[in-house]
Image 1 (tube, rainbow, N blue to C red):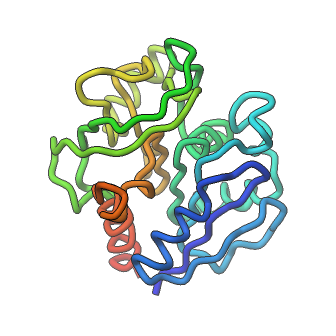
Image 2: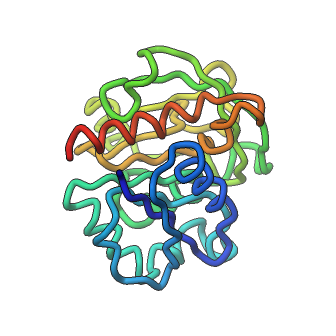
Length: 224
């Protein structure tokens, strides 16, 4: 069994959705990790969910980055263990320096809630349940999801093959190079703006997201 931890900040609102997928759909032990915890050594995978950590009163993820648990998340990642950041979680990971670039206000300055097509760029990470170039559909819900990086950083991301998902067709938020999700150079930290947990149960109208969690579970099991 793989033990998952879902970090809970004041303002997180997708934490229970993620826990439902991991615990109830995949049957894996899952615990909610309060932002003030300082011991996550028991966890194999840490997931930082979507929401509005600390109300997003500063820059999205900027306050959460200083929570006691985040130092442990950084050390967890440095050990090669897996970290997944979804939406606000992606923002937190960039603020913490675990992923390059930043997430800025959407191009049209509107909050977007929709389902969008995504192209899978890599299938040798946690995405082995997909096929390269496959177009899947996942929900998005964000006001600051426009991925931005300076030219040198963007070129490095592309050259290293760190782009995992791109928006297909219309770019909903103005993200550079249509980037919707990236990983770190090592490949054990993944951040994405779309919500795979909201597309993991067929009752919700689609299950394309479930394959990401299944792939992650297989990856961890293979390394055990």
